[in-house]
Length: 167
Image (cartoon, rainbow, N blue to C red; front, side, top):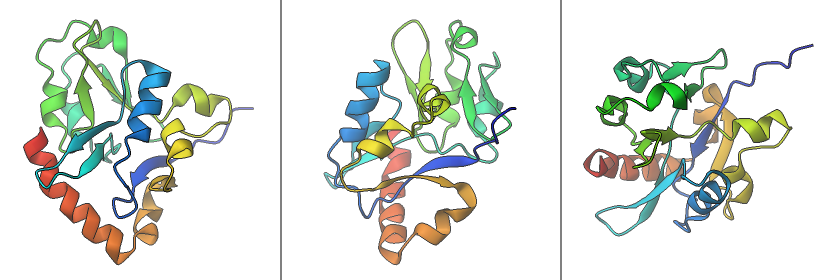
């Protein structure tokens, strides 16, 4: 019997994030290329950038080879074999959150897949499990607003001021 679809995504509460870089380190340890990266804002704060699995992903629309698709759970997935020949990396430019990264290696880009292989074995995304301050949530998209406090909404706005210049 097939498993129930899991309609959860990652959400980072920037009011709790301490910029420790644990999420990037564990991702790099598991996958060689991190799928969540830390950037330094112009204010000197470290902030993680990651795939938001947008409901209407611009990266998928921009991907001419069809390497990016949306599955039945609403997750944006990367098919590395289709990505290998693309030199334009339009998906990187199309992502408003900086959640797709050029690798500089055989596969042109990489992005978070919510630790798909770990989830197949009943585990949660590694960055969420390793986050020392509980800033990374694995949550249903429609419940994100319920989890946010005024502090986290303010922190989210502050970080979003820096996302576009980072790209």
